[in-house]
Structure formats: structure tokens, C-alpha cells
Image (cartoon, rainbow over all chains, first blue to last red; front, side, top):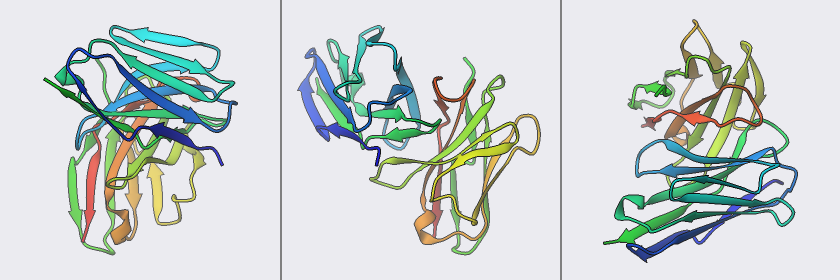
Length: 111
Length: 114
């Protein structure tokens, strides 16, 4: 079964520290991987999409890497701010068009 | 910037009642999706829709569920006879094409079945 796992489930860092969020998936045959942000009780905001042919994507303070052979992606958030506090979800498109989600990592950035 | 919209934002219903959740996808998008998130659980895929028909559905999407694109802008999810376990946040998403493109999500409809 194709699974997406995110560890840790929760993370607390002081403001200014870099965040490293991990995502692993069981099947290397993926179309793409998408990172989302979810605020409590809210919808999903797409942050970055990495195609299977790419190694990384960058947007502002965010950088996501993809290593298909080891089934891993990492989201880096540089110089974290209290406004970065949210749940970050990793979602993978395997051999179809639907997204398979991880359970998320809940981040708290302490001022 | 174009966005996916969903109505209502909250819906409370009695068990056994029918509900219709509405979505307006981004206008030039061709693929539409419904996902749900039960409180404290992962976001789960329900169904994808393209060219006026279902392209894929999960085992959750049984005969109680149906989807429709009644006009050129709306995309609806109907639950025929709601159960307590249907209580969840329901998200609509759309993408320009399937497979390799970003899916854009709406803000969700929180459904509570009593």
C-alpha cells in the first residue's frame, strides 16, 4: 500500500531558527510531491510542487528537496517567524491523479 | 488571484438527511476533486472528476455519494443519507490538468451530522 509518513508530528522552535520538516513515501514511482500549509480549522494552501524529475524547488524562504530513490522529501523554512506556526502537510501523487497525504507536522514558532 | 470557493462554510444536519456541498473551481481548470478530513485524521481522497465523469474514486465514495457539474461553474458533492461518521471537513480542489499539476484547494465545508 502506498503510504506517506511525516515525522515528527509536532515541532517547537524559537523564532529565527531554521525549520526542517520530513516526509517519506513508500513507492518511488511518483508523479509529483506537494507541500501544503494548513492553519487551524482552515483550508490547505499550496506551498510548493516538485515534479518527479526535479530535485528541489524554492519559493522565498521555503526550499523543498526530493530524493525519489530513498522515498524522501524535506521542506526547509529559513529564519522561522511566529507567522509560520501551522500544520505542514506533504502529499504525493503516485501512479494516478489523486493526492495521498501524510498526517502533517504541527509547527510552533516561539517569539 | 483566482481561488476555489466552497459553500456553505459550515453545515449541521440530522442523520439520514441529504446534504449538498457546493464548490466553484478555478475557471480554466479541467480536473476537480473532493477530499475529506475527519477531525484529527489525514486528508483522504474521495473522487476526481474530468470531462463530466468520474475519473477515479476511493473505497469511501460508495453509493451514498455522488458528484455533479450542474452548470459551467459549480461542482457539487451530494451525500444521500448522512451518517454520524460523515462528519468531517470536506475540501474541493481543482487543477488545470491531472497528474503533474498543482491542486488548489478551497477553504472547506465543515459538516456535522447529529
